[in-house]
Length: 97
Image (cartoon, rainbow, N blue to C red; front, side, top):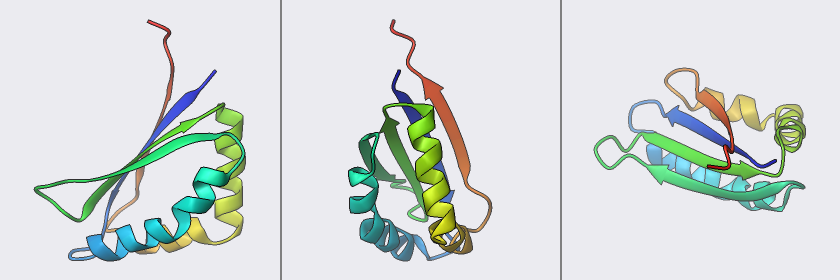
């Protein structure tokens, strides 16, 4: 069953453009990764350093493999280094309602 992952980030002050630029440089690979259905990037209109990713995956296992790959390649550490605090990651199952 498909899984939705919401990643909430807040860049260091004034770093929203840099964070979005980095996401732009890596998201083609994310979209091509096995199990990725879609990924959407949103920016808070009132607080431009806040960026949210809404990801849909075929399964939690696919997302887990993807996160393992991104951790091994150093991408996770690079993103965390651009943030003012830890990201918030939430995972949701479809309810079928």
